[in-house]
Length: 498
Image (cartoon, rainbow, N blue to C red):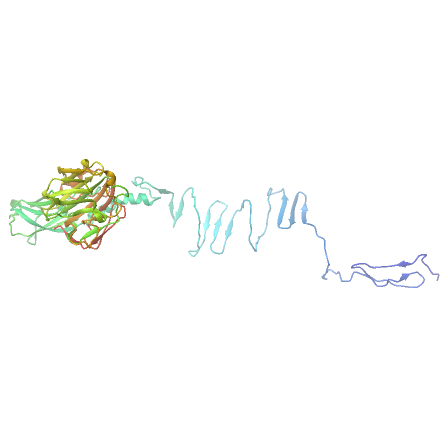
């Protein structure tokens, strides 16, 4: 057999990852074998290990017209058929961490779970949770256009109508409207509940007198009539057919027709009436340390023009100290029987007004007082008692307005000084229905007197403080003006007009 010999030597060599079993020179003269391998099995079931792979920055799957491109932190695509310019996930997409979308999310249905659930349907409606334990918290505002349904009841409006004229069954009212609207209802309820007993005295054989006032019915209710009362004579009910009633100032008069009744009234009879009398609670002050302190103050510079309205009675004929005053120096003080039996409004040294002596300050009867204090032009200050103007006795104006005492310290009712340790420097008598107004309210003197029946000031203009003193017990008298300056009762005792 002939031999074949290479003219030049033949050598097989390997490289990284490529192995050769025989690297000797092959000359063809001798039989030699060479095995070539890659160092590991590459069958379909083997695990192939690479030391290094150079990979592209992105991978494109599909055609140029319809593809998906995968790259670092990004998935994009170009889809021009069926769904337009959009990226479609045909099955579920799970994000194991946070997902941030810088544009809009458009979905036929979105469901979220964990602390609660919310479903947005393709119809535009939404469902918040499906269990009473679901909690939905919203920070900020919610704008609802249309109506919303609560427990199968539809609401389509939030109304500020203070009249309630629409009588809507699908509107919710705001706080201000409800307060305005129901304030009248409150007065009606107070009137309906109002029942008091009074004992009267016999004026004549056909008339009994009660020191009381008929309760006035508020708007929306019928006026008070004799049918709102029951009268007893020595414990026996008096028949209505024989009775008429009328209000005469602070006196409630029961008139009897003896011909219809069959008998007259005698001075020994005890007449008791039960019915709708006005609330007649009041406070008694002993003249020693009794007073009412408040947080109400006048002004920080000079006292301002104010009107004071109150009901008062007293039997004290000597100097009776202040019905009201500001602070420890009786600033802006009104005092009865101050000098020669004259009432005085005192704003500072050499700056005050005297009025003529009036029996109303010490006759032991209830009287309505209205004091207007013009601090700059004191000749314009006025005093009305029971709606009648009291003549001025003298003005003292030798000082100047700039020297007037201010009213920074709070108002005290029934005290010469705002210091209850000063025994004897307090008013002796009784008071109720104390109100303070800004400006001049003397044009309403007759209205506020109200023919002897206390007038409710609650809705009056310019009202700054209003202490009705109708609580009947306790140590607090409420400021019903809305100013929040409730008064504290120190030592005074509650009483009631029978």
